Length: 243
Image 1 (tube, rainbow, N blue to C red):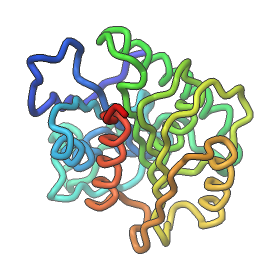
Image 2 (tube, one colour; image 1 turned 45 degrees about the horizontal axis):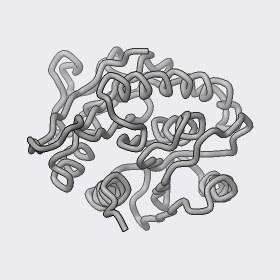
Image 3 (spheres, rainbow, N blue to C red; image 1 turned 60 degrees about the horizontal axis):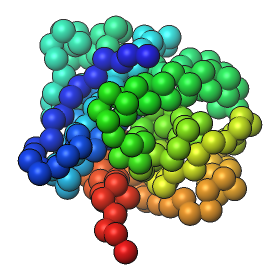
């Protein structure tokens, strides 16, 4: 499986390192693309300058495109924008179809997770790094895919972050449990509170050490605070100090 991506090379190089840089893979939400994760990428690299970041573009065009105004503070290539500064339909991507309520997503989500698993394994093999050297972080639909993918990896990833994402249980065989951070903002106008409550309940059953952070007033978006929390979690888990 191959995805288009925006590449953020390490800001600093460790010339004494025998291995390739550790890697963060970012997954965007529904009906946008990888460029919307640039704030997250920059804050991660400001915190961990030696790390490499890939912000993937989903492989499907969104089935239900929306009128998405691109903020002036966000870089977006001109070819992806209409004259009124909204995203073109082709620039609005999805990891899987969101037709129906959250509980009906299971089969489509699992299929997307299998593709993401193959991509991550290929990147690890190509770079000669372990799965524990990779962090997977996703927002909204990308966050749901992140959480599901982490559970079907052959071995745990170094860090897993689901930001503003629903997780309503997992019926397949669990093969790995990774260090996991779950961030949700209140009030969230896209995902009802009871889905977040269910997500915390279901994730807690699977991962007793999962970290849950609720940010009051955040809503369904990423902020500098939530990005910094994410960066700190990645640094803590991918660069653990030996005991």
